[in-house]
Image (cartoon, rainbow, N blue to C red; front, side):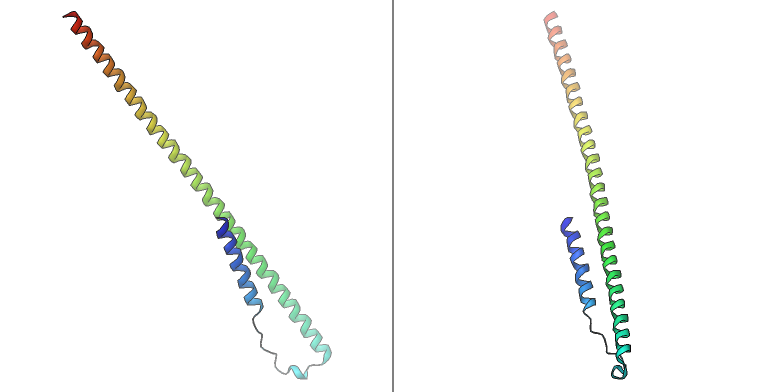
Length: 121
């Protein structure tokens, strides 16, 4: 379970890294921009990248959280099923032992009656 969760987290982080490294097309007429416009444009780009990175990280964290919850639910369900199976197997075993004890008792009583009858003859 832990390996699956860690694998999912690694895949999410790799996907985030690949998307963050994607090459962006240069904006048209960038040479015509003034220094102030370039600074504004870079500031906007940085904010967009930061917002995108935050959103992707939050999504990856949510995916990991969901996977962890699902794994915990699966483990809980498996534990309950195992407990039920053990309970059923124990009950069946106890019934078999009880039936064997009854059969042994019945056999002993019958044998004792046969011996007693034989002695009377």
